[in-house]
Image (cartoon, rainbow, N blue to C red; front, side, top):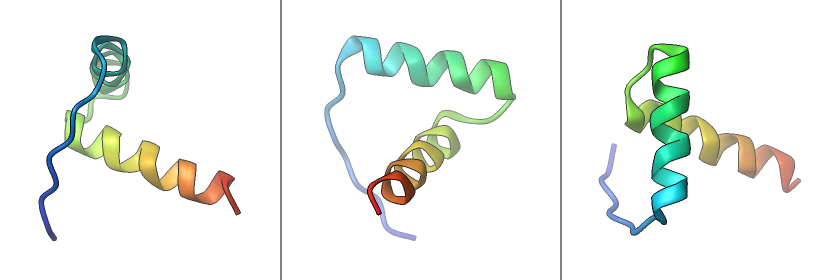
Length: 43
């Protein structure tokens, strides 16, 4: 697995943190799941 660094807005970080707490997952996992969801929706 590779690593990527990116800048997110404060609101985006807040939403990732909230989802992370609600789903009891780490932030990286939540971010990857959101990216995967976006890829699926764009098809």
